[in-house]
Length: 521
Image (cartoon, rainbow, N blue to C red; front, side, top):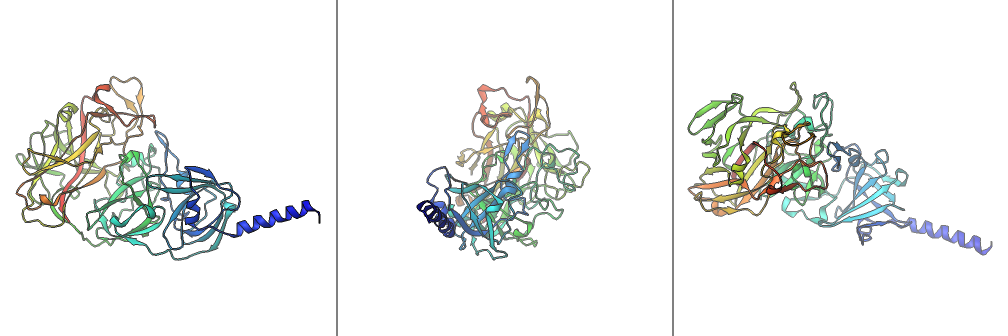
């Protein structure tokens, strides 16, 4: 044998030897020394699959246009974790047909020429460009490593691993797993019966909370057929399992926390149906069982909802506990639709429920001048580790005329006398509901769905100091935080908001409050 053939044979043997030494997840992650790099020949990953190709809830499907979503990314994505469940990595296949991995598969994947990416703060590791032919399934049906944590115990090392978050409950126990305006979602037979939904968005979120007063969002893609199953969300306290991810969701307001959880299937949400809670309600305005579609006013008494009949200068009495909810502007108030029906079998197929939210309407200038929505109650007789304020809201009314030119950035503040206020160091962006195309007075051309429009009411929870317990009077308000004004952005790189001086205001501004709740834990 000549020297050339010997060297060639040696090269083949060396390559075979390289391929025979598989790397675990930790070793692969250690290769990520920069934001993006191509993996060399001979890199093979071994681990256990924690996602499933049959799930449509694997990944956040990104916006590729203001009215179009890339639905393929979730189908191309899988998650692999180490056999002890300590660390994980995301795998993105070449196409949706290449991903045939099921939860519990132990796999060996050749990564020659694939791209390893590192996203920082928090650190997340992704391998993209994986071919179907590169995957070898070593065994199937393996049990996943048991990994139970409370919300406060979740950290960066849990990203892209399968975690059971224990002792949680839904912050909003009315409606479905994605309480959205179905006209903006992806078309599903027997789900949204609209003939032609605009399909502008996909993933939505609901907030889970635990007995420690901690919170995590659960993300659900609108292509999940179980998200609105006519049964509603479970009413008790229990575990939710899924892959821990870190995503921004611009339609939700951008703020869904450092971590969120993605259950792969309905069965991963193991909260029992029996009513239970780790919290004691001090006072609430929820309207979720408002069968008579009525508001209880301090001055006007109980009034049934009559379309276009509004009230101002009054206070709405709580539906649980004792308290008043009012505004210091001249905004009118009346009931309006919320999108938390358990099903979409009505004629419109939009998931709406009449009389489920309190609508405020006023000149936006009144809010910029310091206007607020205020709740007043008492915490005498209440004790615990702390106080929590929950609320949900949305701007607009599916009309472009109500979807711009209003205060975009808001904050929560509290007081014991209604005069001296302490602000919570967090900002909340108020999004308009996704709207159909239309014309706005003073703007040339037709306006279409913005990148920043929401698909439903966004849910938030704010922890308040325990010093507010045992107080004769407690005030909490939601008020504009700055002079930033909402815009209708069709450009994904455009700022979400602009300074008020740079853009005119709408002639009127409406937003709806889906709930306002004070409770102890």
